[in-house]
Length: 221
Ligand SMILES: [Zn+2]
Ligand SMILES: [Zn+2]
Image (tube, rainbow, N blue to C red; front, side, top):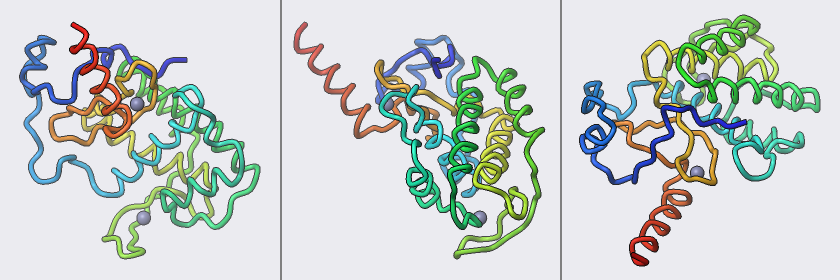
């Protein structure tokens, strides 16, 4: 399965100016006013949840590379990496559930358009227990948790990441969910840049690699 939606098929260099990009694509330049303040108009916990869901999808072998979620220790490392609060320990059953959830999120990320993403996300939200609760913990300012008391890792991720993706859709920011533009990489990421200009999953790896390839191609001409 491919995770690349058709509207993200156009590839640009990182350094193409947004208005130049708009000229090339015929899109209106900078269709939305750039958000004031932070680069991304979302709260800290939403950004964290979006990073967690992208990281989860990127453990799938379909995104390139080996399966990054084959053992309980992989899941433990993931939980630690994203500081999932309220998760005490993980068991083999959790691994199975999170792997199944990963497939669901892959389908959401891989949706060809926003209405399809809405339909696919609603299927997940309908079967997820969600409990909104205001909380302050570990030095973070007051924010809302959505996972139900006693939620498993998979339920936790379904609630937190599901709601974060829902907000992304509500805000009309669906296009920030991207697949890496490097031809041999299918990693997904959430573009947090002000002008939605990010095209590679990681500027140090894929971005750098593609720049080097473009440089070599120019030298051969
Ligand atoms: Zn929290
Ligand atoms: Zn990449």
